[in-house]
Length: 417
Image (cartoon, rainbow, N blue to C red; front, side, top):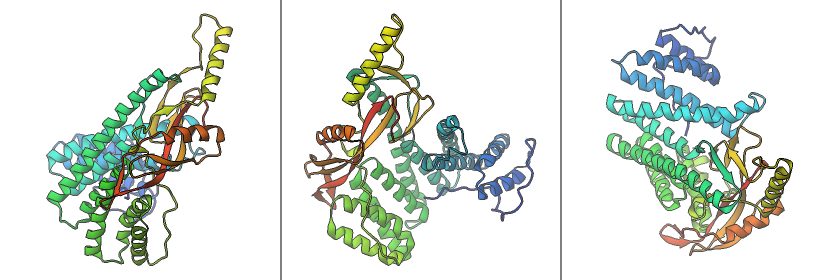
């Protein structure tokens, strides 16, 4: 879904950017400047102006809704920059340190801004569409960005690794729980305050279904997508492009269930809506969250041997000193499921080996194939994943096999993509 930005003034046509002074106190002029910068894609230049508008609106207690909008604008700009940095980083534009730090800084700032904006919006009578939009943005960030606990030590032995996994799991579970609550509140609010076929209400249902897909609740996600498809068809007709997002999302779930009839029917509807030919999904669905062992970390036998050798060498070179860079390293990371950013070249790395899986109706893995050229880790990853147990998949009320891929997470002090 596109980032929603609501400004206090109407959008201006592209033109010369007006001069900006740090002493400017007219929110109308600041918003005009902000609008042009956002239109031109200058997010770096827009951020200090957005912050300045917040500062001004805080002083006007009689107009809390204006502060809500100012907070939302500042959050939207940073969230857009965060998504760009994660999906398409440009090292030429940023130093290595900024490339690692900026996404984390933006993500944390967005959380603070949206938490404040949502709380204020609920008591100031802001429009339901605005609250629903902000809740959806905050929920999206909560389940895509997972900051690591500060000063967390991670060792390669099973005990240290289990403690590390438990800390990350606690953070992940808390954030996923809050994201779910926000999405469900957005749906409930839209059902209460908005027409049944309103676009904002449909967006809230679709966003919840996207979250459910990401966390492995595929059955609930399928129901959400089908609701969107039904309502959009009734409102816009069978040839509306508005059908494409829920149809394509539902198609992935049908393909994961290997339901040939449902795949064919859904593809046919996509062709009618788009007016173009289409193909079955060529990307596997990430089904990692459906496994009981999801997001546990592993260490290769090669890495353990290297770690021991490094520790022994350090001990020989400096008896009585703590071995550095061996089996215990400092983690400085903020991750988005499989993506991790690090400040230090010596920090421990977590990287995922993708493994294609076929899961039987009872949840047992019948096929596991590592999708990597790293053959040393491929065999280990396949062996590990074959022992995993998955929550049985039900598609359209019937037990189904599950096709997709999982990420087998390995620790290493050497970075690998």
